[in-house]
Length: 197
Figure: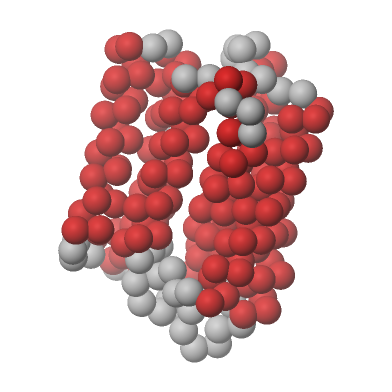
């Protein structure tokens, strides 16, 4: 059995880890609630988070990081359902920074498991690498995110808010979040145990 599968099947220890697993259940229930009470596209947006909610468990993130990841992803999705991005000034930038930070941590750990980048924790740890590479990873994530938003507006529904200024602002916020994620990973271990390769 490979490392990611072992990570996914590891037992739950403690209330924070149980809370992180509960967020995965909340994600599943959210899809059903959105389908019953909102539009099918809203259920689709929430369903889009389900694979993401599994990622921290696959990567053996520490329970606090796992829980934060789940809360951020579901907050981002529900904010779309309730149109908070246009109703609350600045909310879009806050969520983009937080979500890109969370996704950058996950992407960095996944790349470390694949031996593309140095581990964020354990032997061979390179603080400089994680600080330098995190903004690059975050900007790549932000670019893909904005392409998905644009595609959604062009091909699914014109209710998705996309403008040039919004796109650049979102990417800048994502870069800030990714930079903070890199600084965090440079000083705090976000995995349950050092990565085994």
